[in-house]
Length: 216
Image 1 (cartoon, rainbow, N blue to C red):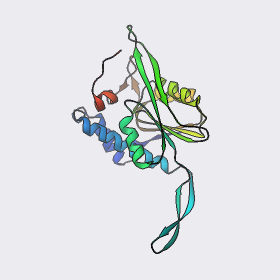
Image 2: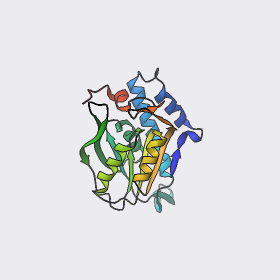
Image 3: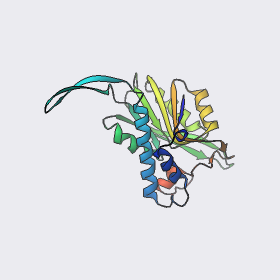
């Protein structure tokens, strides 16, 4: 299943518009904050379909039965681009276990690239609800490599993949290589460049949030 937030009017569209806007992107703080706020919106939307249980809450004047989360999910991010969005999830799932994965494009001299995965820190995933964010789902290759590595550490009951912008090609690649997943994206763009970048997209989310890096 795929959820595209811009299909319905909400503040998510405003945040995504500012994330895309080259004039606004010059303010790194604002870029990170918009990515964080988009993460919070995503967390709220996902929270609607998570399992709940009834709990008796004692107030100063009595007792009220309320629906509360039956369990906290595991929230994971792909370093470094996903850190700002990850904070948005933490603002809502503030007691969640966390996972961190270093996966990046290692570029070759001929212009091609491979996905390098160098670091994984993860709690037990067995029978848990897993939420993984990476702001850009372009070719889908890094997400598939990441998920297959995580699945070596346990088998989640269900996995939610979250991104700000996804390409149609990336979505199809993920769906054809992974099972038992739901994809949440702010918007879907149709075009990928020959180098695997989304058009119109928003650029390099990691660089815009934290500064340009030296390409290996």
